[in-house]
Length: 463
Image (cartoon, rainbow, N blue to C red; front, side):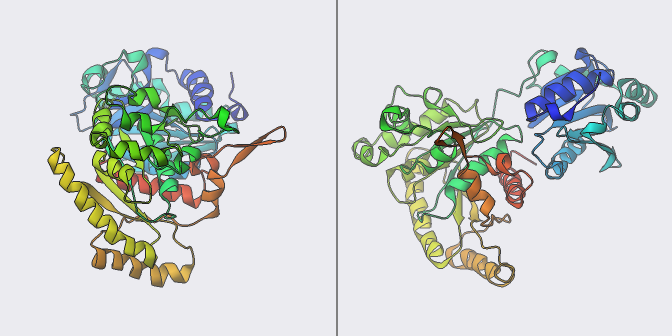
């Protein structure tokens, strides 16, 4: 039996054709000795290969002799995922980790709290070098290491209380600590849609279950999520099923009834679409005070279904913006840091204070402002060196907003990803993609990877 990397077109095929069908059997791991989609606390592993049916004690300080295997799409650059694998190995104290996208195969080893590259080859070389790979992470070899180290063990099911599924199909925990983040600025053109789409994709690729809610009648995020592929009004599938149904009806149209699967990224992200009709429908909502809290109540019903909810908002002070800020736990304020956008931060601050007064009335804590996100930033070297730091300082000193460390620069790849299309005959069909799906080895992808890490750390979903 051999492995052909050309047969792997996406992450799912890397998992099935390389890892399940070839690698694990070749290394001596029968189905009872490996587990897929393993949840250990807030860590989600693609695969965990064990030397027996037991997992070394979590309280034992010795490194655990087993293998974490993480699969990525062939389009992704593995360099962007090394830090995350290193986090898994050091956090769990696991000796070996495999990182592969089918074209590139790497084995990392935990040595004295440092994660080092032990072995690397091209996907086309895996079959020829399987003996060398087996000599490092084969089951027989690791079993002898575990015996020599006399590592104590407990049943895998008792390691983390949230793991309740059978060992053959361990699923991520069902009890989640859902975090809701609004992405808001009352000035348009500062990158709210780009931030929402690509941050959602970055988080989804880390194993988090993500929901996007579009509350902007321009529906740019709905488009960027791949949900607007109809040509005529008669074919419009969104006009009668969108966010309006969620916020208007108190006893129906719950989130699972409206959410659709976005086609812009893999793993898929759920999306509650917006629609241009939100413009005139706002008048009906204004006359119905309770509509301000319907989204809060309906999010409460799905708090165990998602890790992160991202709400894209209109660039205004209207009712939809209020609904978003009433429902969120956290706020990100994208800004290009130019004078007009900076002046708008004063409006943002006053608006949040107004919302906080209402939140007190409904027994919700004040909005936690995560920080201003520098977005659509020019890449000119002189500007980045001399002007950008001054603009960031103005945001902090004049307007009282701290600034995130991550910066999202204005690059052609980001706009091309959202404007992507496919041809069907003579028809041009929109096929928007996240930057990770469009150009995973780009600088923009690396920037959104860093943004996701920074945000997840601040909201407590990553230590």
